[in-house]
Amino acid sequence: MRPFQYNRPDSAVRAVAAADAGTQYLGGGTTLTDLMKLDVMRPTQVVDITGMDGQRHDFIAWDGKALRIGALTTMAALADDNDVRRRVPMLSDALWLAASPQIRNMARLGGNVLQRTRCPYYRDTSYDQCNKRVPGSGCAALEGGVTRSLAVLGTSPSCIATYPGDFAQALIALDAIVEILGKGGPRSLRFADLHRLPQSRPDIETTLQQGDLITAFSIPDADFPRSRYLKVRDRESYAYALASTAGALRMEGDTIADIRIGLGGVATVPWRAREAEAALRGGPLNEARLNRAAEIAFAGASATEHNKFKIDLGKRTMVRAFTEIAGMEG
Ligand SMILES: Cc1cc2nc3c(=O)[nH]c(=O)nc-3n(C[C@H](O)[C@H](O)[C@H](O)COP(=O)(O)OP(=O)(O)OC[C@H]3O[C@@H](n4cnc5c(N)ncnc54)[C@H](O)[C@@H]3O)c2cc1C
Ligand code: SF4
Image 1 (cartoon, rainbow, N blue to C red):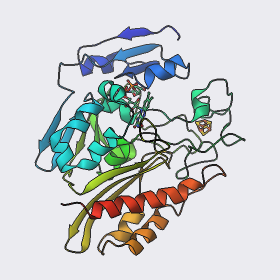
Image 2: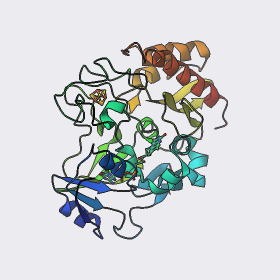
Image 3: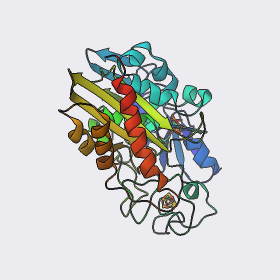
Image 4: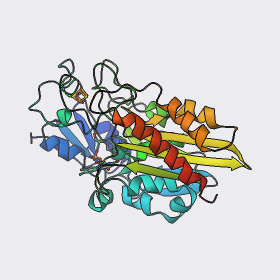
C-alpha cells in the first residue's frame, strides 16, 4: 500500500471541506482498502466518515409511505430492520443476499452503491489494458479475455464491466433519491442519474463531483409488500449475481397498477427495465406477458461468446421473480 494521509472529521461539513482531488471517503472500507491493497486505487488522503455527527447519518426513518436511510447505516442494519422486511422486502432481500455477515456489519450504504466492478482485469494491475483503471489503455476483457461475469446491457466498445452491487437494483426500481453534501452545499439527485454508462470514459463511473459526500437515500414511495430480490449466482452464498431481478408489484384486481423492475448482474450500471414495465402495466400478470416483457428488457443486449448465457438467464430470472411475487400477499 502507498502512503496516504488519514483524517477523521467530526462533521459532514468538515469532511467535505477536507476533501481534495486525491481524496477517497472511508465508510466500512470493504471496497476501498481492498482496492488500495491491490494498488488499483491510490488516494493521497483518506477521509474517514464514520466519526461524523454521532448518529446523525446512521438511521432508518419511515414517514407514511416514504423511507429515508442515512448513508452510514450498515448493510446489516437495513437488511435486519423489521419494518423494512415487512413493507419493502426487496430492499432487505437485496442486502441479505449480498456479501457475508462480516462485510454486511462493516459496510455502509453510501459506500455500497459506490463499490467498484469485480472485472478481474480491473482488479489485477499486472494487466496493462483496462480503460476503467488506466483511461485509453484498451480492454483486456474484450481483447481476448474471459468475459463470463461481464455485462450484456449498457456496454460500450471501451468497457463491458458489470456493476456488481445488489442494493442498487432495489434503489433504482424504487425511484430512490440520493442526498448529497457537496462543496456548494446540499443537493439531491435521482438514483437513476448517479451512475454513468461507460461509453468512451469508463473510468468516470458516477455523476458525483469532487468532494461530494452521499449523506442519505430517500424513497418517496417505498411501501411495496409485494416485492422481492431474486439473485442467481454460482454458489449459494458469498457470490456476486450472474443475473438478478429487483421486482415490485401493485395489483388492482387482476390488473397491474404499478410494476418496478431493476436488473442486476447483467448491466454496466444499475439497470431499470422501464420498457418492460410499460409493456406490463395496465394488463394482467401471466406467463405469456412476462415472457414478452423479458424479451423487451433484453432486446438491446449485446454479448460475447463467454457471457451470452446471461441473456437467457436474465430473462428467466425476471420471469421467475415476478411469478414468485405474484404469489405474495400484499
Ligand atoms: C468478499 C466480498 C464479497 C462481496 N459480495 C458482495 C455481493 O454479493 N453483493 C454486493 O452488493 N456487494 C458485495 N460486496 C461489496 C460490499 O457490499 C461493498 O464493498 C460495501 O458495501 C462497500 O461499503 P463500504 O462502506 O465498505 O465502502 P468503502 O469501501 O468505505 O467505500 C467504497 C467507495 O465509496 C466511497 N464512499 C464511501 N462512502 C461514501 C459516501 N457516503 N459518500 C461518497 N463516497 C463514499 C469511498 O470513497 C470508496 O470509493 C462484497 C465485498 C467483498 C469484499
Ligand atoms: S471490461 Fe472494463 S473494467 Fe474490465 S478490462 Fe475492460 S475496460 Fe477494464
